[in-house]
Image 1 (cartoon, helix red, strand yellow):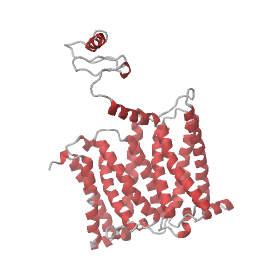
Image 2 (image 1 turned 90 degrees about the vertical axis):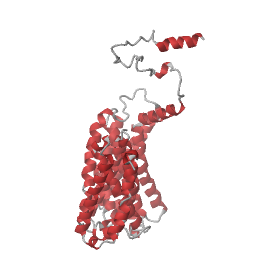
Image 3 (image 1 turned 45 degrees about the vertical axis):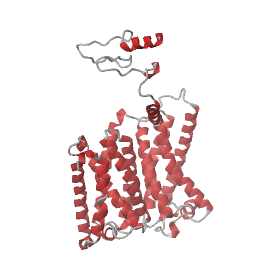
Image 4 (image 1 turned 30 degrees about the vertical axis):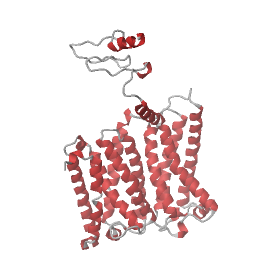
Length: 427
């Protein structure tokens, strides 16, 4: 069978499924009782997956795309994480017991379960989408920025929370290091290439539609409220002695005080990393024309989806001790769901608003492609007409046209398309 004829994304997907028999076999191996062997075998396996990925594209221009290998290996680990989540929630067994024991024991928490579920579903899908776009020669920058935001938030909370948590660290903790530096490399590439494709930016408020003004007022108020909330949460968990802070931690969001420290780290991540973006977004609404906000709105949306799914899930998961779950009162439930769903949904609405022209153009282009007939005469509003290579007619906006030396391009007035249209009108 010729592998060249099979789409690369299918090959990568099949390659990632190799994780299933590998996990099962390793779980039956006695040497996996030693954490050093687990680390060594994990590194060898990841290198092997990278080599196999290179074989898939060695005859393709994609072999020059360094991020292709990153996403291929990460897709494999996402399949591993999917089975970690399944085993932690007791849907399967006999795959990852050795890893929980001598690999990363801190994953046996509510937060560990939720981040593996997200990596095994959300990140898994993102890796396959990124690989498909990369192999098709299409832009994957926006999807990549979304992934960067999600993986950054995941690693900040997981790595620092695990270091200060009660479970301790083993050799396999170092397997998380590539998930820090490789996304940084990708983020630098995406942001450096951003000069050619930015989100929607307004240069002036004059002539702005009323609905846009109302939407921007909403975003301004929301970012201001999110800043106050993030600051309040951060001060509360850092030990402020005020009665209102103690009441909040006890009666509304006790998960922040969980001994595993992941809820605390997520709140501190909002305090130190999200608040600067909130304030910058408010400034961008007041002073239009800030080109950076388009890219960072996507990064923020990716970080928001990972943080909120982990935080919400951890607050209600059965692995969280009951005293740290959402209190069983109507006020606590209303506050919890209203606040945390808002922190999940509004960042995505803001990203869509920042890129509203691009989204509208994409839908318009697809609608035009599906409704336009295969052969039709051009209207005046459709711009230049594609003709045969030997005789093409330039539009006024196209500038000079490179033609062959032997044949000159007729003018718009005397061109063949114009004469044809005259005959149609005469008939």
